[in-house]
Image 1 (cartoon, rainbow, N blue to C red):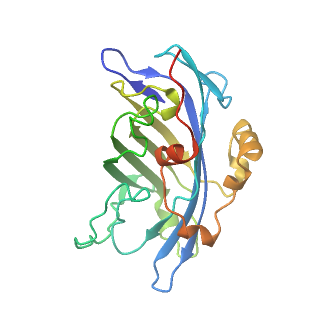
Image 2 (spheres, rainbow, N blue to C red; image 1 turned 180 degrees about the vertical axis):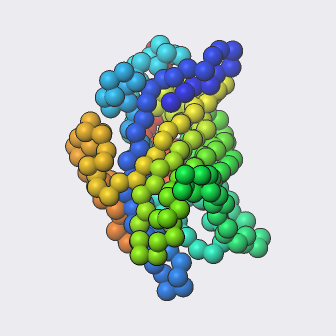
Length: 251
């Protein structure tokens, strides 16, 4: 992960690993519900160990690292472009506008492969209000962008006998300072950048990551039950505001 701060060079701070599990659930109208859980663990750049504390080089303060545990992160796959997430009502959705038909921008990139990109840009009120969370909040609004690239074999995509496809790709997220870094409203932001891969078994995850998950978040290694559809989708920022407490003033 890279930090971008005014008046200085970009800086690599720490690594991260994302663990997710999901299931697709077909509906009577031939749409699908996607039931999904995702965990993000932050890691030491040299050792790959999962971090529980971090020496923030910007503040010269040791801070407690908070894992991202988003359960659930559910969505529809249907004939229309998905509406933006509401994040528990913080991001107001205008449902009066006509829906746009979903046409995924797949393209052949050579070597028998297909590639497809998705870009998501959001700007909505923050759950971490500066008056309550002066050290965790980056301001009254969240500005977040995500960029996905998927890459799959063309032959697999055309094989009607397959019900699931292994894929690789990249994920990029531009987001405010992570709340546990205790950066407050200092200018700057965080950039996630990673490759992503699908596996048919949890054994595909790195041993250190799998051990941490089994010890601290074992339920996140299983796809969520159908009942989880009723829960609201929250990003890591809203989950932090729900589950954590404001840090005391720096001494």
